[in-house]
Image (cartoon, rainbow, N blue to C red; front, side, top):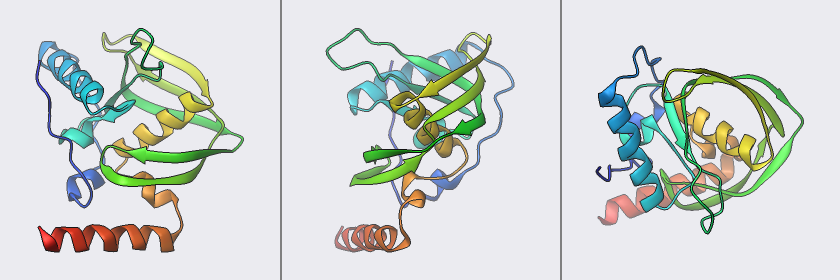
Length: 169
């Protein structure tokens, strides 16, 4: 297995809308394993294909507390079928948006359809942190970063901070 590079804002690839996965083969299984190693090493609780430069629709996540057994989930071609309620995702962060956290409004409950890593169809409801993580990662697959869900002023302040840092480097 290998640790992959995680793309960070303002890399334009993060705006890519992914293509559906047509075949889950051994090569893709290896990518899943490399992404899992990358996510755990970061450390993070979710990672979408676009964050590692892949324009296919899949993600992985593990919301189990770090001191518990890992519970890796892989979703291929995930789609949010419905949303219900509203919850505030406090202090949300992202491996592709380093050094920034913000409160984001998300749906409290969602219904998701996807395939697992073996190609078996899934349909399940998620709520709370589970729903927040899935919305965040599925946003990545649609070319949207979490900072697109915050106020324009806060987003501009973050963008200016990054532009200053890039000029210094």
